[in-house]
Image 1 (cartoon, rainbow, N blue to C red):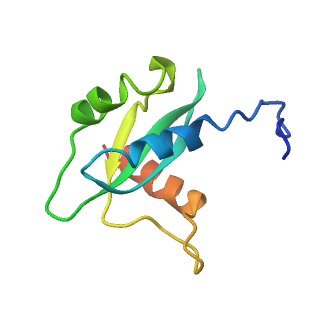
Image 2: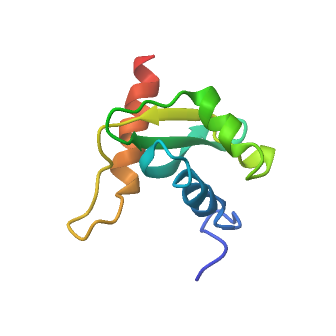
Amino acid sequence: MRVFNADGWFATGDIGILEEVLYQHPKVLEAAAVGIPDPRLGERVCACIVPRPGESLSFEELIAFLEDKIATYKLPEFLRLLDALPRTPTGKVRKGPLRDIVLESVRAE
């Protein structure tokens, strides 16, 4: 595994840890995290959640659940509830299209 990307950033796998913790929430059916470009910080984290049927989840509820499970600086700053996550034919989450969906919704706000 390559730990430094082409821009010199150190890959820690923090988003992967966040995704694992998101799946522990009882209202979460599917989850993924993506980075949203930020001019000051480089990226900010958005949690993308597909709630279980008949459930909904607020940002405040999600943060309250995560606060004692991950460090404060790793908490997502955005939440997007989706009907489905874009996936490859083998079932892997397609992060590029997911990031595009999130960016499109941010621009619309």
